[in-house]
Length: 249
Image (cartoon, rainbow, N blue to C red; front, top):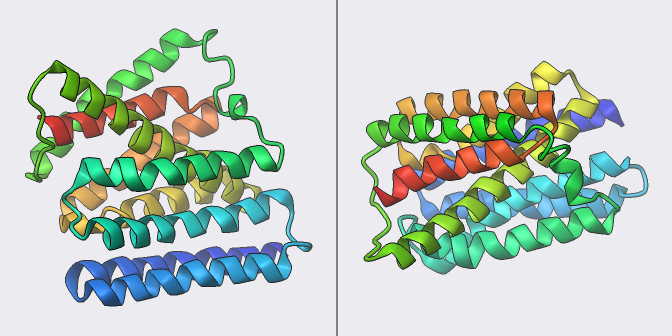
């Protein structure tokens, strides 16, 4: 089964790479079709083989389906990828809730992802501050559209949405589930590279090779920190701050 899972994770990342490439540079409908195929394939594989999977193996396959589902729902509902705040609220929020319910349903408690946060609060604060550094770098790389805000209330609302629905959601998905469970069937080093590469591929739509490399390196940093600390708090806030600087300034 481990050999099967290794083959599966390679097949998935190749399929998602193709989907994102077609969606960004060729045809939105074509990209969505490939994402749809990947989503259905993940569900069917899990449904037909769920008794053979370990708990972590099953969660890994289901987590892959969230990646395709995020793109399918996001582009289908919003229609334009630059409506960032709407995507966060109407797409990422329900997916985050479903992911949490999935984890809770199999007996995984959220506090497993925030082990000893208060004991190491200064460490987590230091990790969180890296988001300022990352945000300034990415803002210099990308000249993407910012989210409009008119007063402190709208700024605060947008900031909270970004931290929860990009920072926490994406870190829970890519680091808390994918990284954690790929490491169960391979080495820690491979899991870090794999999860970071998948994370970078989902930023292909920015059409910037420099940003792809940057996002991959940030992903490696976040993954390495999580494998060391087993805590998502600092990296989730760092991720959120990075996007706040990118989208709100």
